[in-house]
Amino acid sequence: MSARIFLALDDTDVKYGDFGTGKVARLLAEKLPEPYHCWGVLRHQLPRLKEIPFTSHNSPSCLTIDCDGSPDLALLTRLAREHVSGMASPGSDPGICLALDGPHLDGLTAFGREASHRLVTQAEARAAATAAGAVLEGLGGTNDGIIGAAAAVGLSHHGWYGRLSEYHVPLKELPNPVRAGYLREIGIKVISLDRQAFIPMDDDLVETYNRVRPYLWGGEAVLPVLPCGDPADLKGRWRVAHSRPILKKMVKPVLRPVLKFVRQKFMSPPPHPGGGLGGGGGTGGGNGTGRHS
Image (cartoon, rainbow, N blue to C red; front, top):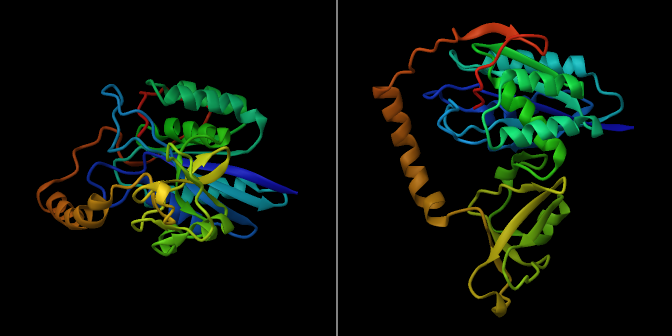
């Protein structure tokens, strides 16, 4: 019998860090031992409100893990704890959440939906995780990362939130353009957003701009596309709907190294009251400040 597990993390970075929570999550996926297989890594977007102190985007990550047989949650928790503690930036407030999928997570989904539009607290996150039987641990600083991690598990369970930053078929290795039929073969549905509802055929080509980020819709990976030119011409050419071609292909590759140099040369991380890594906090106690980033 197979099982699905959600393993989420948040607040592993600081403002001027070299990498964010998404990369920490993707590297964790590569460490999963047999018989665990990562179906995909989901990026969730929480609100960027002025009353919520977050690093840059306020986006926790969640691994969707499949296992043939009975999963060892203690092993996965230990693996996640060691990985996140080892990779989290000094001064960050990391937290992890892990749970078996099932209807018992509906309450955690309700918490995730609340976190998607207002300030929530550590106490609310702990209450929701405890009721759902989920593992929830703070791994340092203020432990505020448990808020985003708990929300990410609940939203992933719901199946209609988030987008995939990684997939069991590496997204960066997909050809550009890629056949719509090939995307379907690997489990990614190709859906047209054109108002005339033309259907992308298997031999049609999808221009990806080397950035494929399927959405989680109905528990499945779905790539929204738009026609290139007039869809009535039926030329069989599409483009990913979420990408901005000129910015992605020309501007960002130039700006990225420049911004990194400026940050390293002229900016230093601000002092952090949390005291860095080393602290801990599970579902059993502590008060929260409401940060989830």
